[in-house]
Length: 183
Image (cartoon, rainbow, N blue to C red; front, side, top):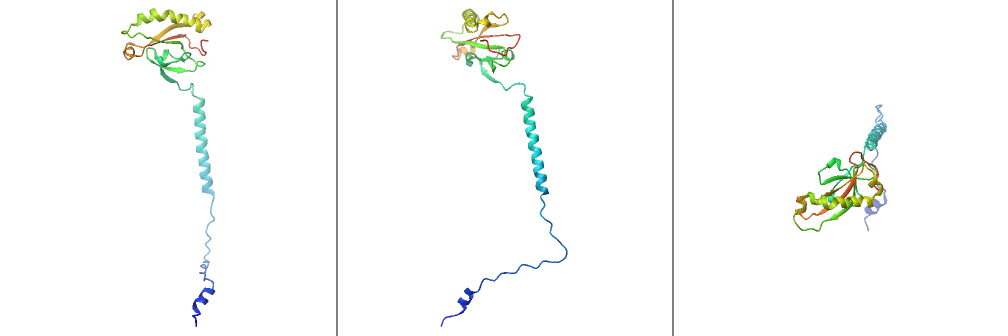
């Protein structure tokens, strides 16, 4: 005969452990409050609002966008820059020609001479008249304006020895900054 115990064990449903009976001492557990979450969300909103306000204030009070500083010898024709802020430097802040500036590149020449440094007098003699003609062709109205000065900017002696042999014709108003291109 077979043993009835395994089949009887399998036929009975599993026993459940009864839940503990509530203690009747008058204590009622507190309901979960959403007050902490509300305070957190209000504080987070205030921080985000303050950051947004600071960014808006900063953007509104910025007088001018940041400028790129570039080497004079690398400026292309039509590029406007502030010469007065960096006079004598080979690096100048480049600006949009519709923003205040005091100079604009009209032409760029590469000097093929492989000789020794020719000196500033040579540049003046060679490129002074060329740059005058360039202004007359590049911006005829500016050529007739007595406030516009024309000149040249060239590599220095150190740059010449390193093989940087360029001359740029520039024009602008050294007294009053302009907010428009020459032509």
